[in-house]
Amino acid sequence: MLRKLQKLLLESPKIKARVIAKKLLLDRSAVSLFLHENTDYFQQDEDFCWSLKASILRIEFDSDSWIDCKKFETTLANSESPLESNFDSIVFVIPKGCNLLLEAIARLMALANQLVHMNKTVTVDFSQQYSSLSYVNRIGFFDHLHAKVVVLPKRPTVSSAEVYKSNNDNLVELASINPNNLDETIPERFKKVFVSHAGDEYEQTAFTVISESYGNVRDHSRSLLPGFIGLQLYKNTSPPHIQTVISDSGKGILGTLNLVLAEKYPEIVEEMKALELSPDVHLLKKVFTEGEISQSYEEGRGLGLRSTANAASKFNATILVRQENCEVRFFYRNGRLSNITHQTDMRRLLGTHICFDFSLTNNTNSR
Image 1 (cartoon, rainbow, N blue to C red):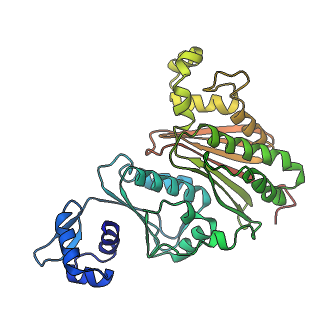
Image 2 (cartoon, one colour):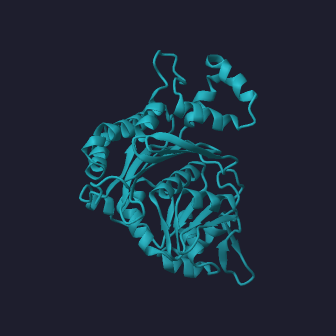
Image 3 (spheres, one colour):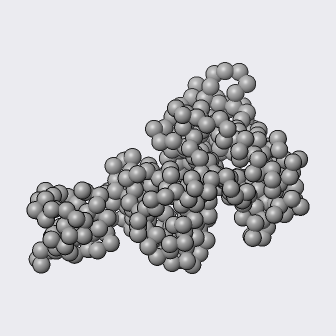
């Protein structure tokens, strides 16, 4: 009953118990008793009308805008950190004209699931922008969004991702990466769609990028929440590009490496002490550009992420690597690493969230 009442009062505050009972088709006495027993969540005014208590953090994205990772993070930065705030309830608002790119959808879903895992009440409100709700349903957002997340105006009862699965060459629906129930066909499916646009000469490159990243989530996430992977072709942009996201809510690349860094790589620890650069950013740069840094004590480990980056360099690609409080972007142009940028002191987001953005500017097979 708690979540039903929260959803109703979020949409229609300041209503009496009898109205609530009528709208929810519940017994009036039971509703009234429940409200009075849960005053941590609900409050009654002098007219005997009920509303949610003001412990709600409202995070609203930009209207009439395409929301990429940068805009997503800017919106978070302009509010309290959802995972660290004392707010019991978090509401994400998708206003009129707000469209979410795949990279932002992945972070929103991961953050919402993590908040629910921390026993916070989470709402994603699409009431002003139903077209975005339809799109995220098509790509599989609701198939992987925690069942306790409240969706407004309502959560779809039918998954468009399941109904139309694999019938669109421009996307691969979000797929779960669950070490306890692993689908090993996922990298092959992603490679097939990728190659259909980039060309057969990139078959091995695509498989390396996807399988290495998929394997890292499978082997290292250590999270009770499954990871996920998705792909979208943006063919009407300039330049057209393929975006692939791989996310998990585990300890993150940095979290796992920091456990062994002092013991296995004391020289790197000393190196980081001498730099003004953030130690986390420096470590991420080394992992992706040099490799041979791993939590494992087995010989030959720690090359996967560097191999992924090397494969991506065959495109004009950008790799975004988001960790708990920082992000590093690697820009590859004309077959080499051309630039690295970073951001620190970001709002907390658990796990590792990687977005590969592959430009198809020079590829005649894109369509």
